[in-house]
Length: 151
Image (tube, rainbow, N blue to C red):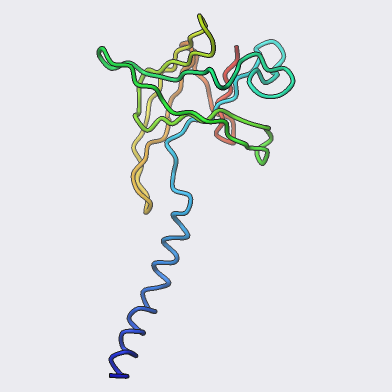
């Protein structure tokens, strides 16, 4: 009986490093998010967060249309002081919409045209943005992956 327990313990423990390393690797799986800063075209000041805010982050709408249906995208403020900003707006793009809209306030609707590439990793499949247009202007992400939208 003791030898069976020893064999079972060896089998269990030999598989543990693989399980632990996979779990550690996948604690932060790839996100299908776009991170955005909405800034003034004139002076580059943040229009959503901080003392100069113009837009109320709680009233935003991000959505896309498919036929007669409107699908609203989930968004959230993202604290990101580690990359030089107080906060960003993170938009869940898991639906991979090619055309999406951002409504910051009544009468203020902007258009996103997005191209994606499918990726896969040990943590699962995801998409990355390969081209992003904001109101038909190409926007190149900054080195930290953030898209700066100038209003």
